Image (cartoon, rainbow, N blue to C red; front, side, top):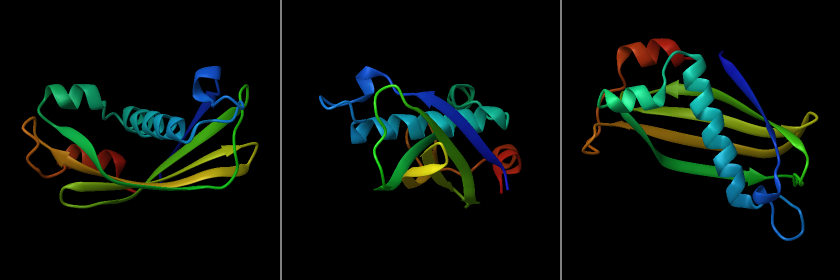
Length: 130
């Protein structure tokens, strides 16, 4: 199983007035984790878009277990659970020092530039399949 870890420093703009990471900021961290995972596998999402292949989030769920705070360094763990005909299912976790902060599941659909569902290209499937 391929797994990718992206370490992120928590900045002030990621937090609320109390210095705790605002819940929506975690979604940015998770998006960065998926993007870096794909890049590491040789599937740059920007290049694929230029080729008429895009991936859009069609499902997202998260369980928030514990807060991160300003100045923390968190790790975004990303792995592919499955690759369907036109979708990719990811499992992700955000941790700090081994402690689970957020557990998330995200599904991407593969679409063309006009947002019509299309098959996940074989080269992408081969590169990222678990």
